[in-house]
Length: 79
Image (tube, rainbow, N blue to C red):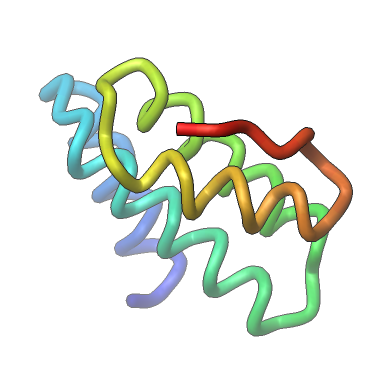
C-alpha cells in the first residue's frame, strides 16, 4: 500500500473507531518502515499498533511486544 493510501486508511480507521483495522494498518506501516530501514519510524508505528492491541485484548499484542523488545523499545511481557 502506498503511503498516501495508508495515511488515508489510518485516518478513516481512527474516525470509525475501528481498533482491529488500526492494529492492522499501524502494523503494516511499521512493516513498510522496517523494509525501508527506518527502525525509528517502524517502532513508532508498531508502538501504536501495540497500544491498540493491548487496549482491545487482541492476540497481536504478544507478537508486537516481541518485535519492539527485539529493537530494545519495550520490555518483554507475558501474555
